[in-house]
Image (cartoon, rainbow, N blue to C red; front, side, top):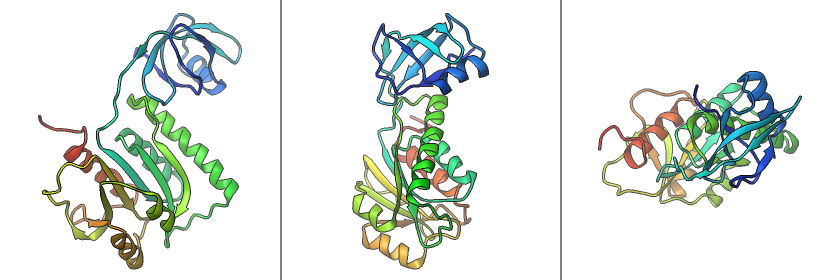
Length: 245
């Protein structure tokens, strides 16, 4: 059986013992049906992972004996900062999950003109905690040892003021495809609108802030498809998703 990867908020070091958080403990014992002596891999999202062993199981907790650190780094050399308009329901979970799997380093949730989701401060904090759990679960599955940074929802002006990258793109179906002669950037900001797209004024605002309008082809992609297709293309061109040497 594949050794499960478990995220913990604890500081990690070789040979210590720690009690896992309740949700992680429940997952190991009730879902995976693991027992004392079974192997697990721990990571805390700050880099590296630890080959560890279950030492004891109580009613609601699992005690772990932490083993040696393994400096496995599965991060892309291309730092992608995704600015994505907030979607309704499970679409946002899907985007965050898959963007994490595809190696995005930073995700900013955006309010744009055509976003229909309304969030007050308390609900935004609650949703952010939920989305962080989605990203953690994706890291456990895909092997990443660093969590993508998720920002509280903000407006477009806040995104433009706070985002820095070597290359900046805004998806727009009436634009040009990705040009070939751009050099090899180390960082990219990718701006994606909601269902219905960004407004003409928002596209203009992005271009005035140094963003290049980018098309992914002749078909209009849904808001949950477009960012993932774009991320895969960018990782293939400049990151670590290569189809050939």
